[in-house]
Image (tube, rainbow, N blue to C red):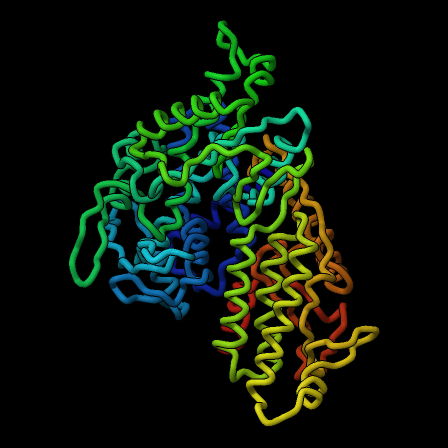
Amino acid sequence: MESMNAQSSMAHNARTMQTKRVKWKDINWIIAESYVNRLQVRIVKAVQKDKWRLVKRLQKLITNSFYAKAIALKRVITNKGKHTPGIDKVVWETDEDKSKAIEKLDTSKYHAQPLRRVYIEKYGKKEKRPLGIPTMQDRAMQGLMLLALEPVAETTADRVSFGFRRNRSAQDAMEYIFKLLARKTSPQWILEGDIKGCFDHISHDWLIEHIPMDKSVLKQFLKAGFIFERELFPTDEGTPQGGVISPILANMALDGMQKVLSDRFHTNRLGKVDLRFKNAHKVNLVRYFIVTAATKEIAVEAKEIVRDFLQTRGLELSEEKTVITHIDDGFDMLGWTFRKFKGKLIVKPSKKALKALKSALSETILGRGKAWKQEVLIEKLNQQIRGWTNYHQSVCASEAFAHIDYILYELLWRWAKRRHPHKGQWWVSTNYWHRRGNRNWVFCTEDKELLRVDHIPIVRHTKVRMDANPYFDTQYFLDRKFQHGMKRLSGRFKLIWKNQNGRCYHCGMPMEISDEREIFFKVPKSAGGKDEVNNMAYVHKSCQQIYLECCSKE
């Protein structure tokens, strides 16, 4: 009874806010998230019962909801591209701009604008990757539609799909691949699939026919076109590059691949899944994607099945990048190398990933950072190191971590010598490297210290439960996020995480260890606050920005 009253109260609040202009800073984000989540849970239940008319009505409730519009807007103005305008050169910066923007998010009056086309560098290649930049209004509308579409996508998705999914990561895919290939009786052949221009070539007709969302809005997303060098180009295929909804549309276009392979390799003459067939063919799909097989011939057959499946969606496999490999030769995927040595599967950072990191560190130290103060350089390097090691911390990366320490020392020594060409080696070393505890040669200042990469522990990742739904199994995912932080963090940072139960100090929402986060001092150091656990808290970087904006206006 209490939950029904709470739900009706939130619905009443949402309707009230709909009828009057609400100041941006007055929005209660916890209530907003809770209200939208309740509607999303109802969508999941309706999908599971094949009540598609009810799904459509609930989606309309979300897209017309004030809270959903506010959440969609918040995600636009807190991501990395918040200062990057589209073709209209509009950026929402003031609270007044944000409040007006919420009012304009109306699906019945919506008209998508063309994307601003730019080209970005592709690592190790001369050609550039096209990227479309939507206007702020279009980004917000895509985010709003995403809130209504994502519960459907999560419920109907292939179980072995890991990319662009809520509460799933590349580490989950890695653990699943490890489980498939690690045993002595595991499949020996791997089909490494690569879809040629996946986002650029998905059939519009297929998307409009099969994607369960507002068709008029979807058509506008797909047919908006793009502007390059002041010329308008139409878009007859593909999803809007740079749009937040594009990954979900691409995922839904690829859903069903698992069933197609299962129907061929895992079923008997009666059409039922038979484990004897599954064990015989050893065909398993991992949606990033690879297909395992017992023999090379089966891998070739699986390739043809996948090719036919993609063709109905306007997609095709890249002949150059789609290869069939034996596990003893190994293959690269997601920045890791998977290879068996004398029957034992080893997963470690790939040579390409290490090369990319070396290049990034060199650019930071000898390029952008050649005139930086030591404190600034240490801060920037620690950010890069944490990001890279957090990603590779769950594989056999000890050797790679030690190598990175060596690379850092070589680059930093060149940096220091270049700054003081007339000083001797002893003077340079004693000015930049010091003793900390029982460690010598620590690159540090009084306040900042460079992370020692080879001291970062290797922590095995716990694979996500394959049948878990982020809208149903909320407690499972909350516990998982919290435990993930407890495993990865150490020292006082682990205590801070534990004290606030893995939630942001500002907004109270659960945090993921991979989220962009900052340390917040409850009593600022400028006001006498101490660098102690009781005075420190983890906050979302976006929440901290909002907090600072509010403080500056007071």
